[in-house]
Image (tube, rainbow, N blue to C red):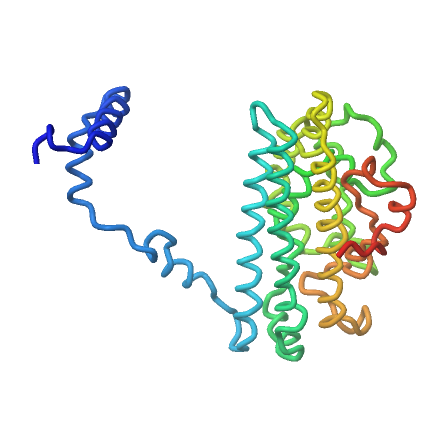
Length: 315
């Protein structure tokens, strides 16, 4: 087939490719030769199926541990997607209310999928197996999910993540490093009797503190709330965007944490001294949304809604 007999659209694409590679100082013919030599892409190679399926490595012989580890790995993949969507909102050069709302809708859909699948954790394992294999996992805990902490940090102003009795909450000039010891989640990994940090928390802080502080600094003016305020200043604020922000706030701070509370009640609730959580976390105080009243966007909720936070049913 000569160049003259090539379809016009194919010829045009070849010219475009030649311009693209020439701009980078590359020879298109070499890349075309490589394409001729390359094998076809397969599904299993594209998603690295064999590698993916090799990542589930239970520590015990209890069959239900495979369920536990696989579910947590899939959850982390959805967390990765959520952070991916937030990054698009944070760094959009000309953010609009429509783009913001559409990406938030994606995020809410990911959380909805996670909520709907959580029955795997609540009802999908034998309690006696769980109570056995969990002892081999000490001191690791879902508390140590850095991606979930990152989702919280990029979602709202950092002061919204501080413990309720933090005295300098209203000082916007405080450095994140100074605020960090007052994060609300730290209380969830302290020993009830001594109020000392658990090994779970010590490991997490040693591995991730610097990374989380850098992220909080990076998103100080780019978190979802700050980006919302910027959009509102343009006059583009829409009811659809506010509705998505409210749904997100409730899904993450009430529904997601309520599911974890149900799971803890199912597998761990006997008595504080009788059963310790996987990483020694103080889940009785840490998980209940009614106790935490963690709200990312209080300006979008009425006083009554804030007062009833954790009791509201928005399903």
